[in-house]
Length: 273
Image (cartoon, rainbow, N blue to C red; front, side, top):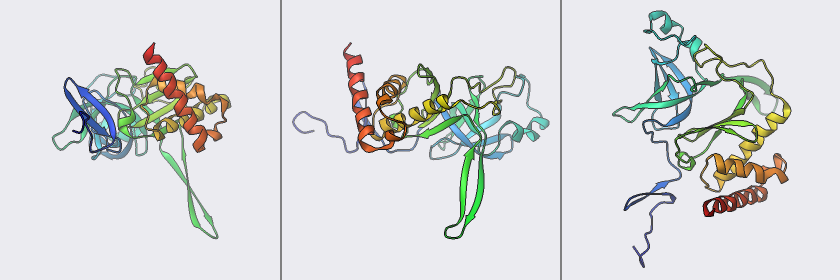
């Protein structure tokens, strides 16, 4: 403590509870809390459970008893359900879920028993091609109607709601674990009676909607690169301030910084009002 000022040993986000002041490091793995909304990818199918990558130190667990069965049936899981697990979720599937419990070793137990949670994207399809100079090249294509953005978990502001339908025409799921899912508002992730695990991949997304998703993705990365907190207001403001640039220009350092500064100015104005 120097001259009545506190100096932190790490750079990060300041959190204050009464007289307790702590600094949460920006570059850190996700430390889950019960009730957190997370976006994760299935890494392994095991007996009566799935392993899920949620950007934490250990893989999270999604039990078969913690998911909605197709048709929304409420019954005890049978051996037949266990055999059909890969029909529900398989390796590479992207899901949204909620943290139900934290085990003693630090891994998380997830559940998707609400219809707002469920499958977001199909596995990545890896296409291999060969060239004379570089050998084999992998091209990864995700059969989905959205984009996954990864940021530091500390940059996602904790709020009661992490599902947003933005005025610009896109749905955003801000996972507390730093995984952010952006999709079109016209995309229906779960059809009625499907248990939340159905997705219409046949219907193409129009070019204007894809441009909205791409612009939002670049805006989120611009805010994250400037270490700004991510929530619905900051993302919407960044989207509006980015309109004077093309989508590709938002990848350049100067437009990126300009959008972040203008967004921060609007957020300060909102706080003053």
